[in-house]
Each structure stands twice: as structure tokens, then as C-alpha cells.
Length: 101
View (cartoon, rainbow, N blue to C red):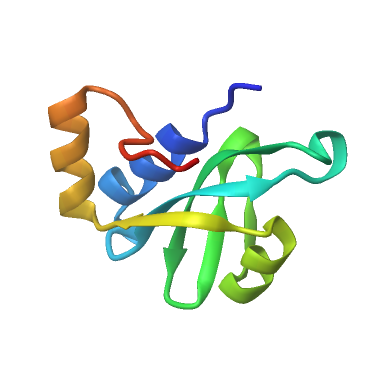
């Protein structure tokens, strides 16, 4: 399944002033619902203790602890706004930029 999570997370932090201080997280997660049993790379943003996932037209905003527990999150990589610009300019894609598996 191909989604827009990497692009959506990076775009929010790079261009939306509401999220300019947020961090982008790339990680491996365990799927839920229709993706139950799948493990895949995913991206979202974190602002303080809040995980925000606006991929696939969602608007999930929950405490990070709950988000990590629900998704059984592993292999995290965290990027600030400046690091996003650097990686995107260097690689010409939204990520992931490091191996998550």
C-alpha cells in the first residue's frame, strides 16, 4: 500500500506555520483495521507530547504515548525542519531517507 504519509508530514512542518516547531518521525508501525498484521514504514509529526497524523485525509491527534502503543512503533528516526529541507534537497524525495527495517 502506498500512501502520502511521508510527503504530508514533511509538508506540514516545512510550510504550515502552525507546525514549524514540530518534528517529523519516520518509523516502522504495525497496521490496524484493514492493515492488521502488516508492518510498514510510516511518517507523522510530533509537537510536544502530541502525535499528529494527517496522512490519507485523516486528522489524528493523540498523545505520543498512545500513538506509539497503538502502532507498536519501532525503528524511529526524528527530523527537525532544517533536517527536512536538507534531506529533501539532497535526495529529491520525501523519505524515508534511512533504512527503517
